[in-house]
Amino acid sequence: MMRRIALAVAGVPLLVAGCGSSAGMGTAAHDTPGGQPSGGASMAGDVEVAAAPSETASMICGEEIREAVAHTLTVPEVPAGTHTWRDRLYRCGYRLGAGELRLSVKDLDTAAPGKAYFQGLRARLPGATVIKGLSNFGFPAFETHHGDVVFIKDHKTLWVDASRLSPARLPDGMAREDVAYGVAAAVIGCWTE
Image 1 (tube, rainbow, N blue to C red):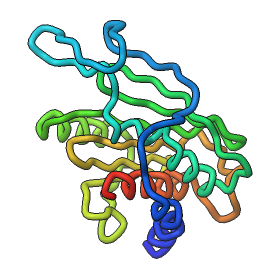
Image 2: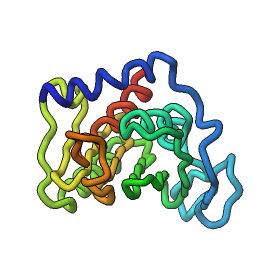
Image 3: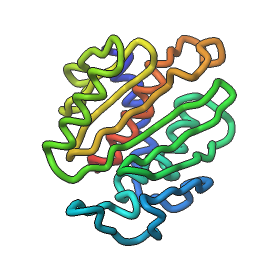
């Protein structure tokens, strides 16, 4: 647990600089449901479908989180992320020397669907264990030994998946779970600012 707290504290200088909008999000592979243009919403039956992710969700591909990825993995250049948006799921993938780091946010606005998605993901990921104490920042969270860290805040589920990173190519003493947690802590810090 002390290592977790140290990882979170190490990211504080990045967070003090402020978390802003998603400007400069990297390369676009931007998909909108039903081919709708970004910036509005469309109706699918009686359910409103967001044509673009919220600013909160977009942060995972924003400048501050790109810098947190570089800082956590001690890479010399800030990586660009490739993002997609479909079915209220915003994804951002970072191709790195150690492999691919994947972040996603299920961008929901109400409690019941948000909680259902979070619990469904927990049931689907093998070996999910609850993150407790100071390490969860006061939010429901879980992790796996494969390198997944998941938080839910304001009905939005953040999933940081470091399972595709090669352990041999990570900084000394760092495991995939450490990378996932460090990046997730930076996102949660932005979300609570």
